[in-house]
Amino acid sequence: MKKDRRDFLKIAGLAAVAGIGAPSAFGSLLRGSDEALAAAPAAGGEEAAKSGKRLGMVINVRAFAAQPELAEKCTEVCHSIHNVPDFGNPKDEIKWIWKDKYNNVFADSSHYKRPGGLAEVPVLALCNHCDKPPCVRACPTKATFKKSDGVVAMDYHRCIGCRFCMAACPYGARSFNWRDPRGKDENGNPFIKTLNPKFPARMRGVVEKCNFCTERLAVGQIPACVEAVAGTGAMFFGDLNDPNSEISQILSLYYTVQRKPSLGTYPSLFYII
Ligand code: SF4
Ligand code: SF4
Ligand code: SF4
Figure 1 (spheres, rainbow, N blue to C red):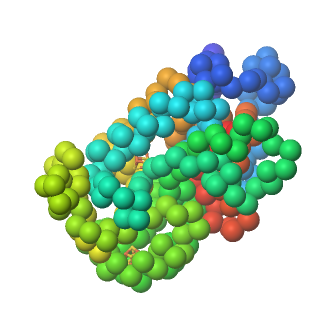
Figure 2 (figure 1 turned 180 degrees about the vertical axis):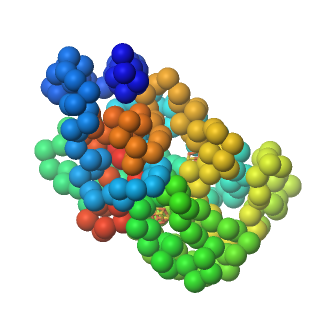
Figure 3 (figure 1 turned 60 degrees about the vertical axis):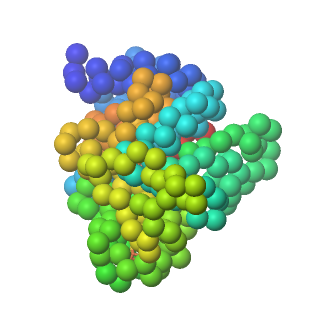
């Protein structure tokens, strides 16, 4: 059995775990040939960069709707390992990954004749690691930059807090530290409950966001949120430019949507609805 066919069968198993209904092409692909996989359309129908790595993520909204506790697991692990402060009020909220209603996450999509329950379904949102990121263009100090693997990262030491990147990001994926994250509230409780000494804590006046766990990728690990829901079929991560990667094969099988595709930012996050 060829490797890509083995991988495909593994994905089919994951899809079953996640409760994803098999599309009509699924059976014929299983019966069929490796040629069928090779002929699968490009992810999202966009003109992605054809060379080099482009890391991306698939979020299976159905799996998160079926198991709401998964979203909490993702947020908890992300915010704890990345020293994301909790200032205790929505105005100052710092968020790397968060839940919002379907209608808000996909505000520009038509909601006419959608299944009734969908409007209230909580959907995970995070930085889209856009292939054409407007935040990078807007940043005057190069504190925000795109890495060769497609990750849109930050150098906190270069951030001057101008917030141009926040104005440029159409997804609300960036947060500004109005207060010192390493400080305490009036009762003496630290804003970062348990400091992870292996990851830098930010300073007041600095912007932050999801970094696709670039520090974990550097040592061969997958993003912490994806690891937290492993085996559920709720999230997939990998190289969008590798046709044999798990994520590419998922994208070739299931119809997915991106947030605000008309803006031309080319998000690297895809949602199975
Ligand atoms: S989602 Fe926003 S912060 Fe993330 S890469 Fe795109 S524009 Fe930048
Ligand atoms: S706030 Fe920081 S990251 Fe954002 S544009 Fe200004 S310098 Fe760049
Ligand atoms: S990829 Fe990493 S940084 Fe981004 S939301 Fe998931 S755990 Fe957080």
